[in-house]
Image (cartoon, rainbow, N blue to C red; front, top):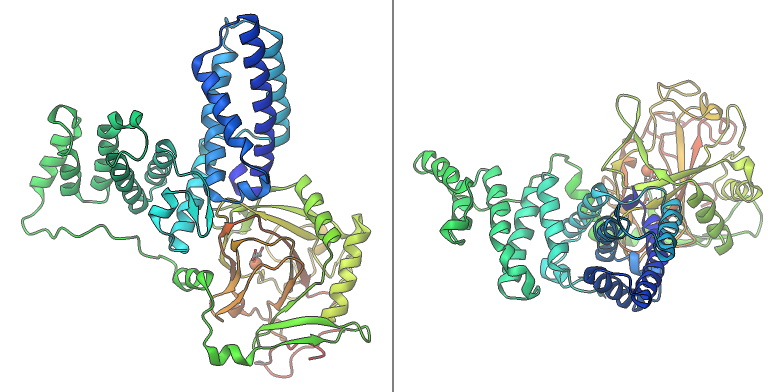
Length: 524
Ligand SMILES: O=C(O)CCC(=O)C(=O)O
Ligand SMILES: [Fe+2]
């Protein structure tokens, strides 16, 4: 799915450019030849052409979540209609039509899977997530503004896609709020004149959503704003249900959904900003750390002292990052997570695409391993069996993409097989003793890596890496290391994970002296 990687959305944007140029040629030659072209097609292509010509950086443009949704909607719905009209059975098989047909094939090849309704819903879910977690102002969003970054205001259709999408996704609170806002904006006449007549339809959708959350009185109230003849067949039904409610039933206001996961609220708060007290913050420090190479020092920043979480700055060059992004892009697929059942699953909790790069396939990766080893003191040898490390996992986040709270450890016994299907080389490598994660891009807003149980927060900084231990020195898992990747608000977030396994660290990291011992960073 395209929505799960902003990089894929950017590809879609570029391919839409190809289609736009082909459709322009089609329009021009058809007009010249006197072949019929529908007014809608002419209006559509001219409109897209003007809209696209105001964009000078495609990456920045798709990094704005409203633009991403706009593009996905346009391709999944509008372009489909254009194709249906031009490639109909008895349409003339002109050269220009064939040219467009070929452009479509090339575009499809580049984006792999054409966006569908699921992509629209995925982008809608992303925008609603951003709206909730970053407490964005609804009116600003409707105006196309996210923080300081503006885009064109939402069209009537785009707002409807969000409101209706929310209801389809079972997010009634969101759906009702957006639909109400849509009706208000509409009645103020802000969304263009051709939309007015649909109001009765909107009210029916809104009423149904209210009814579904048990607010029959609101359903009735909403429909009563329509003319009696346009209230639809459900109106009477809602009225009978309302009459059947026991007297004195309290008519509460619509409530936002409650969190089912107890870590969700602290996670979201930490995504919005730092939570450590000034006193705790003052104990953290920034310094130059030694490495295993004399005189090679790295700028390090402690974000949590016990257990240790540390940021290393400028540990990967631009060309190395570019290599990881490009090489990763070639094989990005929808991210999975390990489920309790021991299977890999796709999940709303992790909206991104990932690619695995094998260290021994590229010298550059081995060079990075050396660097990480030099800094952490851990063994980073990649082997075909009993490897000390996993392959590099390159990740690109989607529209409003996040990775909800989780732990990286696998709960595997030391040097033994767990129940999970894994790559051959790490089958017997034990648990993920530590995580090293490179930030391969900057984002304009959002996307921090946060540790809700420690109130630690790592902002996305291109060229930096974050490092922590997932286990205690005695080998047991450290649940406090629960962490998450916050939703990306503006921009494209790329990271590369390097999971370091227990095997291979025997001589480097001895067991703790006490049960309670924490790992410490060497050389501090
Ligand atoms: O992207 C992030 O900030 C965190 C990613 C992460 O925790 C993971 O991929 O395991
Ligand atoms: Fe993680």
